[in-house]
Structure formats: structure tokens, C-alpha cells
Image (tube, rainbow, N blue to C red; front, side, top):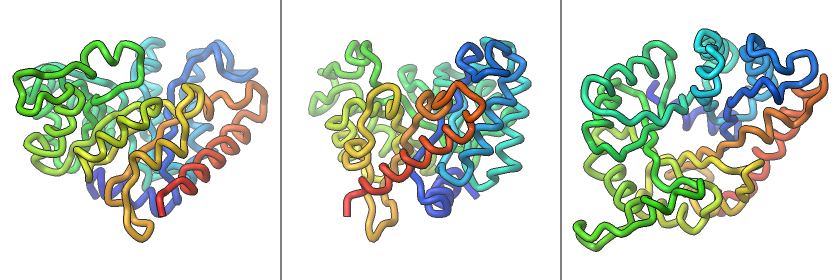
Length: 280
């Protein structure tokens, strides 16, 4: 089963558009685990156990593991997700962006070492920085398109005078991903939840691509506005789906012994908000 098939199946089985981002920060762990980088796997695995029937995907952020020399714990976590939620795809949030043989190595890291189903990429070095990932049959790649960070305007919201129609850069990325770069239907786009009007613009340019949308929850993105802007479907079945990520709001819903129950409660609330917001 390829990434898009897995995503669709998980969305249907769990009735969910929610992606839980696994961004472990030991200083924020609950009592008993707090401050101990050796407990990254334990913390994340318990979050997965508490939410496995509520999500359409998981998104571990590689830097949060690598910064603590916890790549081995990430490998164990990927294996754990495979055991307890084999129907849920895993998006490795790595935002890689390099060319040629280096990109080939990054692709092996994501898909062979960690066994991810999809990976996030920066497209700004061009097609040859994306192509090596698409050689892995059935895997997905999400290109940064319109991100929600303050500096996103510096490049993404600038006009390209040399391209027909003078699109904004993020619009050009969306068109490339929907069109000539999407050779095997493996591409998606990353669009921040804090810009619902621009989510809608990306959806118009890329009507069928999955949109990975971070920023709901602690970052302030509106769940209902996000779904209305980006999700498209017919009779409740997605034709252009969204993957709405929430990290801190779920992971750190409680600093006490009830952190798993609290994470589940927030994940359930968010999942239901997203479902209700689907356009009829």
C-alpha cells in the first residue's frame, strides 16, 4: 500500500484529519520523565498508544531526536508505531533540501533507516533536489510551500517576474507540485494554518494534492477555518485531503501523571473539530 492509500485508509478508519506531531522536548516532559533525554522513546510511545485510533498520521520531527543523540530512540519509535498502529502513515519531518548524491543519502535515511512513509522537503534547490525521493516507489514527499513562520514572506510571498503570469513563489511551487514534478502522484504541500486564505489559494492551484498543515493548537491556527479552506471532497470522501498537525497542544496537555489521558482528550477534541468543519 502506498502512502496516499495508507493516508486515505487511516482517514476513513479513524474518522480523522489529525496528525499528531512528535516533537519531544525533555524539559517539558511530565513528572517522572522530565529532563531525561533517555526517556524520549518512552514519552512518545505512550502518546502514540493513547492516540493511535484518533489520527490520520504521525509526524516525528527529526531535530528533536538528533539534538539529544536520540536517533536510536527514533528508530525504536518508528517500529513501535508500526506495531500498534500499522494502518497509520508516518511523515518524517526533516525538511531536507540538497542535490544529487546527497539527496539520495537523505532519501535512504528517511525511507530505509527510519522506514518513514513520507518526508518533508525544501524545494528551493529545484527539481534535482526532489527527484531522488520519488525513486522510492509508494513513498510521499511534502514540499514546503507557504509556511507560517514570520520570515515566510521573505521568499515565498515574492513575485516571479520571469515566470508567465508573475505568480508568487509559493503559487509557483504549488503549480510545479500539482503538475510537472508530480510524476507518480507522490507529492504533497506544506501550508501553514495561520494563513487560511492562502491555504485556499494553494488548494485552487493544487486541487488533488494532500496538504500538510501545521500550526493548529499552540501556534494559534483555527481548526475549522483550516479545513474549510483546504479540504475538498464529495459525499464525505476526500478528493483533496488535509493533514492537520498539532504537536505541543497534544503532547503537553498535562504535566502530571495523567499526561496520556490528557493527550487523548485534546486529540479527540481536535479530531472532532476537524471532522465537523468539513464542507457539506
